[in-house]
Every structure is written in structure tokens, then in C-alpha cells.
Length: 294
Image (cartoon, rainbow, N blue to C red; front, top):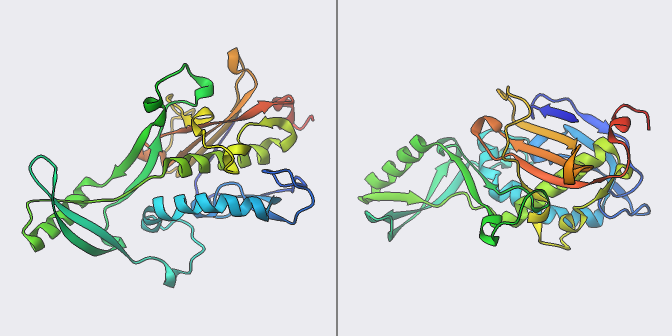
């Protein structure tokens, strides 16, 4: 089994040689571009697979990946100064939040308008998605259970300070604001893309039969078959300071023998979901590949 822990702002750039084709569609004739195995917005230039993605596939992937990185995680990334290609002078400095007043039962009473809040005054919050294990690895469950639910880490004290300020300005009693929508399909599809790219970079395209290409290229929406969460503890106990953990390994027994899976967890110190993605089925002896024997 291979296990890697990366600290996003400390890891050195790893450049890996081109596989000679697009790792998503297999095109060998198209002009190929370098692929950030983990999106630049999360890990800068931590791992680059050279000349490995064609323009057609890149355009498909960017449509949903940018939705995740900018809309879902954009504010959080600005708060923690995550890597960005946007010049500092052009980065977001304020966020417009819609505040409302609620009654004692939590029902909407009135709209309190939009307030522009400086990024540095926003409560720290990150919004992800939590799911059951991938369908391929578990017994059947209901469709509703399979959908999973949104997951958030929020600074509740910071939220109270912000809401109290609006309450004093408006005379409202119970104040709330909407934040952190997660598009489940975009997010889980992005996990599939990262997992496939990581396996291709570490093991090679010839090492496994890929399961995720239809998801990555938007030919299928059935993310639950191969993308979910890992309900078990991290393979390592010490996560202090780690902003990203990646685990790549091969199942060694039972019905899952030979399946290759990636475990991916952002900001584990926040107690975030550990995502588990079934990448494919091994076609070679993975241990010999890692040892450089084949």
C-alpha cells in the first residue's frame, strides 16, 4: 500500500513524465497540456503530470471543477490564502451576504437585505459533502441514504458576532444568513477527476482498468457507484498541520481484491469527511510497479 501526506503550502513541486496520451480520453494525436493532478487552487504546483490532458477534456472538466473551486470553496480559499492564479489586487475583498429575520420557530419572517462584508470579518467556514461508502464497496441502501448530505465547519462565535451586528442595525430579533451551497454532482465529479489523475500519475495508465472516465467526462451522473466516503479512521494518527491527505492503495482480499482506491481528505484537523473513490481494477502487480520491477 502507498500512502502520501501532503501539506499544501510546504510540498515541493513534483513533475512526472508525460504518458504520451490524454489520461481521460486516450487521444494520442491532440495537443496535450500539463495537468495539475490536484487542482492548482488547492495545491498550487504540488504535482504536475506533464503533457497529459487534451483541450477537449480540459474544457469539460473545467466547467464543473471551477464551480467547486470558485463558488463552493472560493470564500474559504480567500480566508486561508489558498493558491490562486488571480492577481492579489483582483482577488475578492468583500462578500455580499443575504440576511433574514426568523421567528422563534426558525421560520422566515422578513428579508433584511444584502450586506457587503469584508473577507477578513467573515466567520471561517468550509462547506463540503459527506456520503456513504461507494456503492461498489457496500451493501445496498436507500436512494435517499445514498445521496448523502452537506457538511460544514463554521466558526459559530464569528457567526453570532456578525448576526448580532445586523440585529442591532435592523432591530430584528433572530438573524441568519445563507451561506455555503454545495453542488453534490459537481463536487463528487471533481473528486473522481482528482482520484483518477492521481492514480494515473502514481501507477501509470497501463496499471489499471479505469472506472471513472464516464463520470469525469460527464457521460454519466451516477457518482455514488464509485465515489463516497471512508467511515474508518485515517491510516495515520498525526494530522497536525496537514492541509491535505491523499492515500492510494489496492484492496488485498475479499470481493474487492485488486480494486484501486484513493482516499482524499481536505483539512483533516477540522474533522472533514474523508472521501473514498474507487479508481479502477489493477491489471498488473501494483507492488512490483511501485518497486520499479515492472
